[in-house]
Image (tube, rainbow over all chains, first blue to last red; front, side):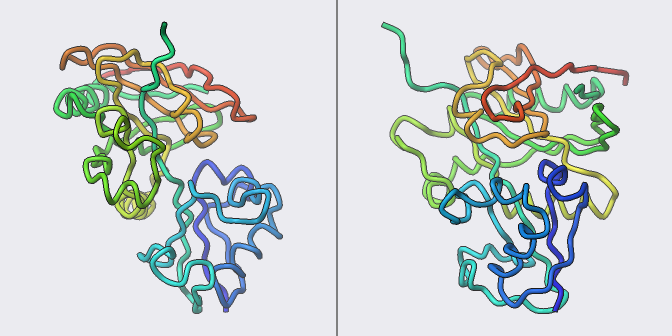
Length: 99
Length: 158
C-alpha cells in the first residue's frame, strides 16, 4: 500500500531532488523508516541520534498532525499523503550578555 | 546564492512588519529556484502563533516563556504552513524561505534563529525601529548549521 511522502524544499537535496516519494507502509513509522532507508542522508534531519523524530519536524497525515493521532504508530492507507512540515521559528536575542 | 524580489514584495513585508510592531511578524516566500538563484513570485503574510502562547508552547516549547513572547519570538502554525504550501504546489510554486521582523533590533540573525533554521531556505529579517521599517537582510544556514551566511538580495521593478 504505497503512501505519498511530500518532501519540503530544504530536504529535497537529500532525497534525490524529489518533491515526493512513494513508500510501501502500514504505519507512519514504516513510511519514515522506508524513506530514510532509501535516502540515508535524510535520517539526521528527521531523527535524533537515538532515533526519535526531531521536535522541529512536524508530520501530517493528510491534514492531521500525527501528534494528535497515534503519533508514529498511526496507521496509513493507500493513497494517503504524509507531509513533512519543518517547524519555522525564530526571533531576536533576548538574553542580555552585556555587563 | 541570491534571492530576487520586487519592490512590491519588499513593501508588502515592510508594511506587515510595521503593522505587527511591537510584535514580530512572519511570512512565507514562494517562487522558483534555478540553480543558486531564487526568484520570489509571492510573499504570503502568516500569523505569528506566539500570539497564542499556550498553543505555541504545546508545539514548540520555549525555555523562558515569561521572557520569550510574541515581541521577540515567532512560530508559524504548521497547519497554516501546510495549507499554503499545498496551494502553492498546485500552482507550481515552491517555498523558497521565510521572513520575520526584529522590532527595535538589528536585522541580524540570533542564535535562536540559527538553532531553528533549516538548510537551503532564505531567511529574510526586517528590522523595525520605533514602528518604522528599517534595514532588510537575507541569510542562508551553512551546511554544517554552524552559522548563517549573508545572501545577496536583488530588488527589481516593479
